[in-house]
Image (cartoon, rainbow, N blue to C red; front, side, top):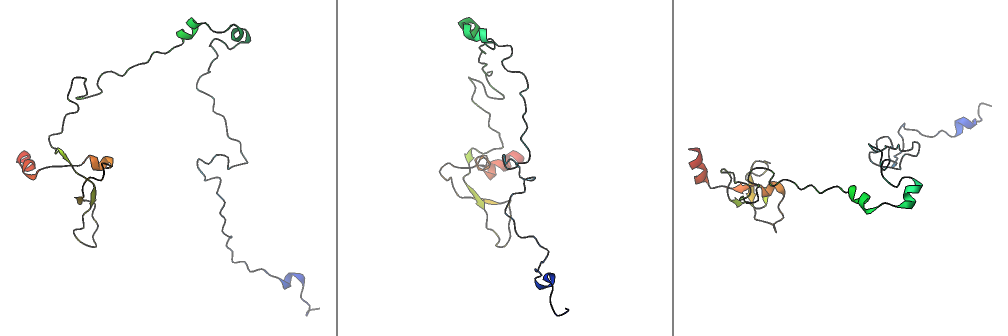
Length: 156
């Protein structure tokens, strides 16, 4: 019998110890993906305060009678307007926000990286390549050019 192979010795799969690739999402680590985890139901978070408990029309009798116009008007909440101005220079008759004396009046355009030295990357220097249809980012819109003579006059 030693010449006959037993069933376990005939086919031995080659296992390299690695799992095959799996494209399924790991449900424990999937953030903000509702409905993926079938094992647990999503909890219910009740409102901070009961809604409609003390309002008119919660009982059947009140619902049949209906609500009068005076009762509806008493529930209205008045619109609150913000006060005039929210800070410095923001008054109705004011000139708007004051200009910073160190800031130039002309706005720079789009900024692109300066190619001073090839092979060296710097985030400090940039070239003004003009305004691109007025679609500057907030950071680019905040950059203004100053005159060096005026700047030297302020410092010295």
